[in-house]
Image (cartoon, rainbow, N blue to C red; front, side, top):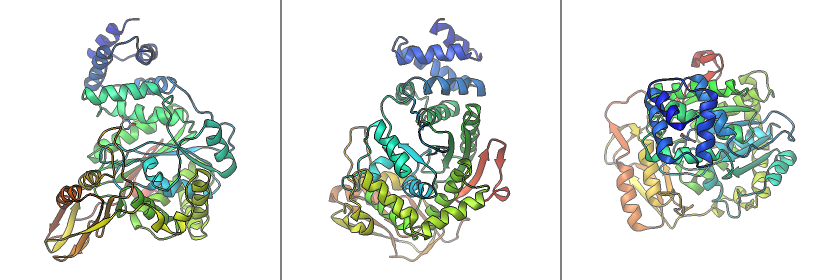
Length: 446
Ligand code: URA
C-alpha cells in the first residue's frame, strides 16, 4: 500500500477502505508517513468528505492508536458525558457528583481549556490542593470505592488524534464534520466509556456556530457511537450566551457548588438535570428520562450530590472546607461593575466575546503553556431577555491587573446588544438525537 495512492483515491472522490485508513493512522502515528502527505489527505477529506463507514473506521483506528482504559473491573455501565465546549460551562462539576450520587459510576477524563472556552480540569484546580493527576490504579479504585473520579487525559490516549488535530489546526482542516466527530468519539472510546451522552453546543460561544451544523455533528457522533456498539445520545443545546452567570475558574466552581446546594442559575440546573437523566437512562438505572429527572432532582434536595462532591474533592487532595465556605476559593483583588449605558431589552450577550474578555483577564490560555489565574473572571448580572435601565449593572468583572481590566471591560461591553424591542429568546435545549434519529422537543422529556 502507498500513501500516494490513498491521497489520490480520496482526492478523486473515492471511498477509502478500512485497511487504507488503518495504514494512514498507523503510519502517521509511528511517523513513517510525513506531515505533507497527511496534510494532503486531510485536505482531500475536507473537500470530498467521508461516508459513515469511513468515519467509523477512522474513529476505530484512532481509538486503537494508543492506550485503551479498561473499566471492566468497575461494576455497572460506565456512561461518559462530553460537551463540545462553551463559555461558562461548568456542567461536569455539577453533573458528575449528581450522577454518582444516584449510584451510577462516573469515571471522567476531562480536558483543559484553550482559547475562549474553559476546561473542567482548570476549573477544578482552582480548589486549593485539588489534583487531576493520578495513576490509572487510583483512578479506577476511586471509581470502584466512591463511584467518582475526574482525571486529566494522558498523552497515551488516542495519540493519532493528538497529532492529527495539531496538523488540522495549522492546515485549515478543523471544521469538517467527520474529522471533528471521529476526533471527539475516539477519545471517549479510548477512555473506556460503555455509553455516551453528548452535549453539542451551538451559538456564538460554540464550535458549531449554526444549528444545522450542530445537528449534523450530533447525528454523525450518534451514528459512530452506535456503529461501535456504544449507546449514544446527543443533546443540542444553546450557547448564544454563557451558561449560568459565572465565567472564570473559581467563579464557576463557586456557582457549581451553589447549584449542588440546590440554588444556582436556572439554565445550568436545567441542563444538568436533562443530561443527568439521559446518563441514568443509558446506565439502565431508570426506565424513562422523566424518572431520571426526578432521581437527579432528589439527590440535590437530599444533599447527596453535595456529599458526593465533597468525597470527590477530598479524595483528590482538595480543601473540602471551600465547599462549605466558598470565600476560601481564590478571589481577585478588585471587582469592577460594568453599567449599562442604555435602557432596553438585552437581546444579545455574545458568549464568545464574554469568553475572550475572561481570557484577557487571565482566566484562560492563549497558548498551551500559558499560566492561568484562577481567581479572575466575569459574573453576569443580567441574562438575555432581561430589561435594563441606564446605569443598571450588567456584569461584575473580577480582576487582578488594571491594564487587563481596561481591555477586558471594553471587550465585554461589545458583547451586549440592548434594544428597544425584545427579540424572542432561543430555548436552552434545541433537540435530542438518539439512534432512532431526532426526537423533537415535544416528543421527549427535556
Ligand atoms: N474537539 C475535539 O476533540 N476534536 C475536534 O476535532 C474538535 C473539537
